[in-house]
Image (cartoon, rainbow over all chains, first blue to last red; front, side, top):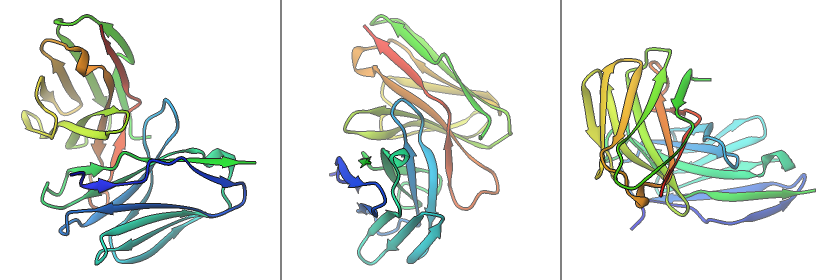
Length: 113
Length: 114
């Protein structure tokens, strides 16, 4: 059983729309939650970190965390074709230890003009 | 940019040969990690290090060994490469002083085992 689950996609949204990416995790003791963006053939790039329940906004990105439901999401407002990439959810601080992250398999986002 | 380089960036080798991948960092970070990335599996931790000569296994460590004799270098060795080890390998670091355990990745090494 995977510990971090994401819909593989592709999630297709029109330019200017809101893209909503979701992630669930199984370890209730998890304390830290991350979203990475990965362009094809490139390395993952950290775009959002969240540690407390609620919303965290950074520019066009909003991360949402609900620990009771073991759910974390990423909203991308005013989506642009340059946002087309695979988005990886990562969870840490659970039973695996403070410095280890568990990654989901990623959701592929396609933003079309 | 976390100052991480990986070498080689691409390698093709044959089954049964030993292979060593190098991760080099320039910012003196304590924690370093090796991951592999395969379609449908995301990133999986192979080994990590929490200091010079201090290493531990991740979830997919079989067939791999690591060494860290200097803070700046973390080596991943495939003792006898197999086709199942064909993958993209990423090194990562946790920045000292960063909130919790944010990790930052190197550019990756694409390894093909024939």
